Length: 185
Image (tube, rainbow, N blue to C red; front, side):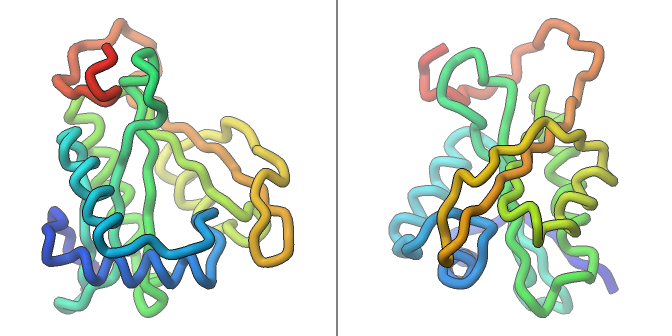
């Protein structure tokens, strides 16, 4: 049976915080080096939800399997039609379709909100082939590589940028109804 997806709630924050802390302490999907507190994670969750952007949880057989969300790409007004995607999967749920299900759902919800671009910033390009392949399979294109921009675990890490154009024709933007730049529009 595949993963079941739903909107994240405050009751998911302990599992979300624990998964993210494990990635901070042992992985390279984030360049943070100290896990954020539960309070900080709650503030991040509230900020995403305050922009009316999706934050999803995946479960397999009722067990937390991962989460994903989109957040404003940059704070300047001209960037307000682009969001960055973040996905974190529990070890027991990897290679079980969780990442694909979460990313497909985020693409659909982002498109439904009238946004134009989804940006993926995939760190540690050397060991993230599966993530890069997943993004590519769902229509993301390479947008560039930041070389050796992060120092973690005693080594330099790259960040591969990938972009999905939800409106490849480049039509003038429609109002998304979202304020992604904190009232700076």
